[in-house]
Length: 125
Image (cartoon, rainbow, N blue to C red; front, side, top):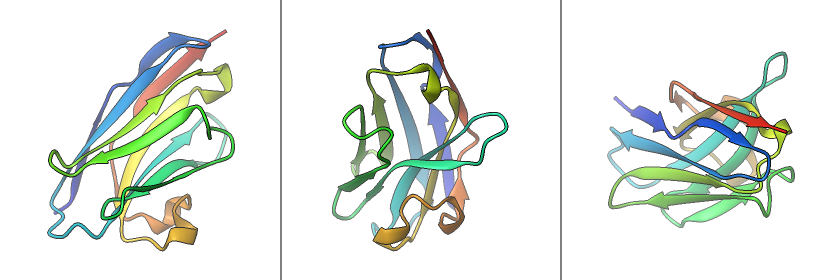
């Protein structure tokens, strides 16, 4: 059974930084992808960043490219999302997800089969 455990959300002023962590357990091979998604009230869940665990190849949504960094530590089975230069529009519930996903679908929520419980990120102006 694959389980994801998130931590690291919180409140920060615009321009600040936060780091989210997602521990992964239950995958028997390294051939999977990790993704971070977010959902603001009244909006659809959207992909933020994703990474292939085997190759550590990252992929970002245009809205966060250059500000957010995704990383995967194989030794700790943990995925991180470093968020810098945060903006009020980054405010949302952030979820990590795992699954075996084709590279062109890395930001598509429905392609990921396993999800964390979510952690709130609030950015004030």
